[in-house]
Image (cartoon, rainbow, N blue to C red):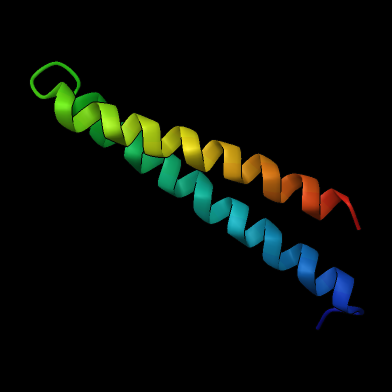
Length: 66
């Protein structure tokens, strides 16, 4: 049990980041497989992974802010 709301929130934000790591990893795997035969599939997946990376950085700023 967390000792404070802050501790609880930071744990939850770490969990969010871990979930985004998995999503980035899996998007990258699919994008890699489809890169050469179907770039129309891989390119949006790479874009989505990059957006998740930016979101992860934003969550990190919030997490470190309190």
